[in-house]
Length: 311
Length: 305
Image (cartoon, rainbow over all chains, first blue to last red; front, side, top):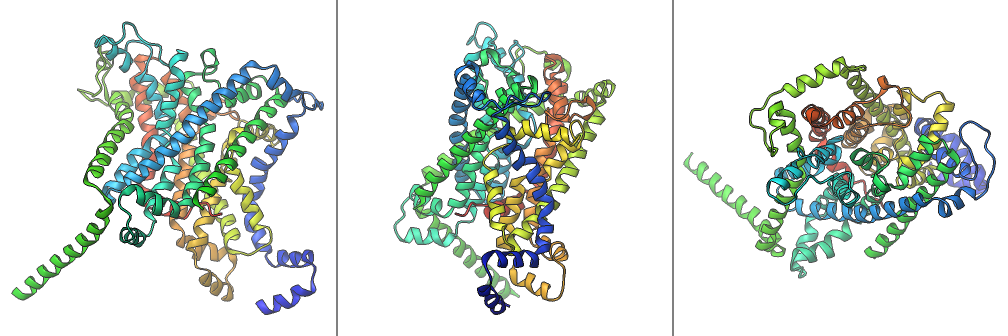
């Protein structure tokens, strides 16, 4: 069959050949159709649409007018809260992104030292917070602002504080607490990826390494383990970064919306505010487009760095 | 007879010696102090990770008088199931009964997960095992879409969905869940390395249709991958909360109902903890069942460049 194809191909232009191949594999297009039709509808078109709408003043009711860069200019020059939102989003991403990545990496490495039975139990313990729904709401009971909150009550009992602290209402504490809760729930899919990555390193590599003079576990990690699990590290980075920009939902549930003094107001909240509550769709689309660019940008950057590290 | 026993003993001893030897080799790079340090650190952090969940369970088992004790106790002294009973009783009288929230959550989780597995499997099989033009391009787009989350598309999605009259129906949650890019990514990566091309080729020569090859030959080979996909899709849908696309109270999910309960204050904290426990146990059980498959799948899920 290969021979036949080769003969025909040399007689055809590239377009003709592609067309023939496409006709031959009709069934493949049928098989990808359900996924990619939906994918186009719910992912590709929305991205393009929000890019287009970001240049208009669409408000869901009137026919949109083209306003060129007005939305973006308003965002950066005329919207103080948006500047706060950018600041918060970046701060949050800088803490929780690398934080969750390094924590996942470190604990996956440690867990890998355990025996298989214990390993799967400890994996479950570390992974559980990230899958168990809104169990993180228990933190609001734990850090409740009245004296029935666990932390307040014991703090008062032991004379550490004189009156109940408004943990989730005071902008001094909100940011730190949200970061802590976010990190607590962040040992998710990338954590599992690392666990799997550590397990599939070939044992004979370690033996060879020991013979070649690898002296301790750090050297082993650096010279043998990490280079072999680079694919997992890349995927883990993407998941961690995307997650770091998307923690807004947790903040919503922990401190409510809007947060006091906008101290935990992220771009996600700004987007929801203008898109979901005020119906300034054009303006919200500009926010969405910026968020999209930030995510893609930081992912590409980190990807490039990781690729360099391995070589 | 005696000799047999002795032989076995020697064999056992030799086997032990062998395994010890392998372990010894590994211990060249491991210091005892480091091991102990790691165990202690793991122990402490594991306790920190589990503590809030244990607290949720304890809180859900506390009778009302223990909830009001000052200072609050961490552990429960006289556990009761009153809170769970109250959860179903009080919520049954509410405007939208608890069973409706429960039904919604189970319904969208099951249907969404099934649809996701079917759509992803078809697409992943075609992309990884049929050499049609455009497959690399399509997969690249999907990989790129891993780099942003659904918030970015939520506003335009709302416009599209209202044009399709999907807003405020179950479809608004279920249908987009059919095409998660991570699902396709996982299935494709796993199929590529774990399905043998020559088996597929011989099946094709026998005249089997691609559809049949996928379901009869390929899918049994990639059981870990779809078990993993079921876990990920299920936990996402199960945890669906307040949502831009749903505003009718009777279409809202359990996660939403619980977050309303938690804000009700100290007297309800037992009931809300009970609801939280109900919510968290289901995905954890699903994970326990699928754990081995998940680890197997993730080991082939890396990004190759």
